[in-house]
Image (tube, rainbow, N blue to C red; front, side, top):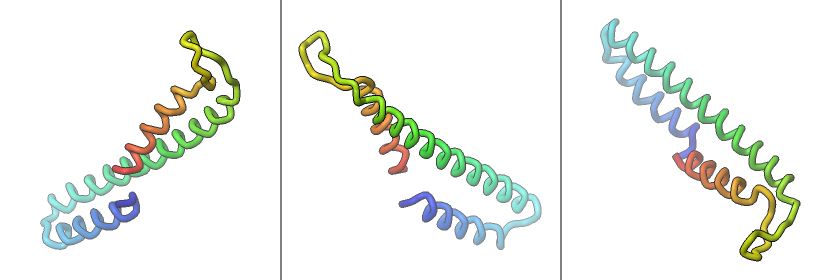
Length: 93
C-alpha cells in the first residue's frame, strides 16, 4: 500500500468516526489526524533524504580499492548498501 493510499484509507475511517463522534471525540480525532499527517510528512522527508544520500554515495563509490582480504571494493559501498536496505524497508511500510 502506498503512502497516498494509506492516507486516503485512514481519512475515510476517521471521517466515518467523526460523523458519529461528540464534540470531545471530534477534537481528539482532529488531533489524531494532525499527528498522522505530521508522521506522513516526516516519512516523505526521510525517504527524500535517503534517496539523496543514496545518490551522493553512488557518486562517491567510483573509487575502487582492494581490502585487506584482497577483495575489490568500492568506497562507501557498505554504507550505500545499508542506506538501500533502510530505504526499502521504509518504502514498504
